Image 1 (cartoon, helix red, strand yellow):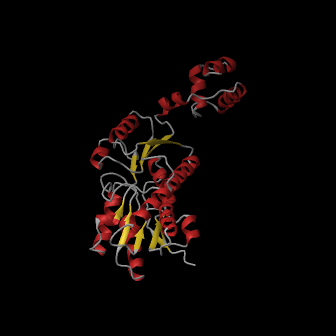
Image 2 (cartoon, helix red, strand yellow; image 1 turned 45 degrees about the horizontal axis):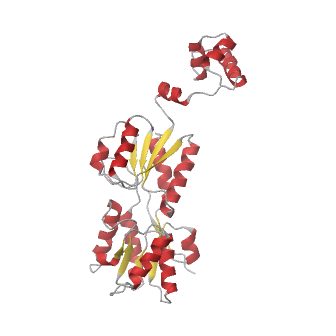
Image 3 (cartoon, helix red, strand yellow; image 1 turned 90 degrees about the vertical axis):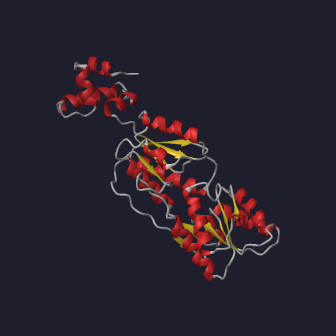
Length: 314
């Protein structure tokens, strides 16, 4: 593989001049730069990314903390939007799986502090925001999609408003006893806690017994459907935490030849359109795009993304 030394030997310029020219420094004449670039192309010179990183202080990498890599419509949508925006900005997303393990998360944060990534997007966290404050070392460095605090930049779905939209809809449809599913547990994170408390505020009889935990996909939805079917006090509506989970719930009820309660999905995927069920749309793609713009410094203001309830009725 050709090196800067090879280009210098071929062109007759010093190594220092070639190095500056390859960085397109205006201190080097256009004629010299032209000759050096042509020679670099002829020799199939490939810049050393580590050397570029050392000289510019930038790696071009954006770290993305995610809890798991299993299929999940929320994270699928979010990851695609992050990849697309990184590609548009010529950045490389690096996905860092945590499995909600605090120690693994801390290891990723330490790597971030060693300048392995130019920015870090935290999609969901097992750590508190106080822990993240230790790692805020520059203006555009960390953005969280879950921890809602003025002390750390964040762009997140307005969970409270979304749940209120769903609750208003189910009340208009005469429902009195809601059930809900969660990807972890009702109090495992800020978003889940907000969802539970918002339902409780509008339906005082709503209880932890009306929730099903660890629902992340279609299979989790089937589990949730069977859970609600076997309840003593039956729910008359279910707020599913994804359209995939909603589909699994529907399957469980159909398999048992039971009438469906009112079911509201989440993410507004094609699945909810096919099933003709209402679905909360938190506009996840926009959130992922805005997060990349923030950590790369291409946008200085974080835009609020408000949810909508899409009905998909026949």
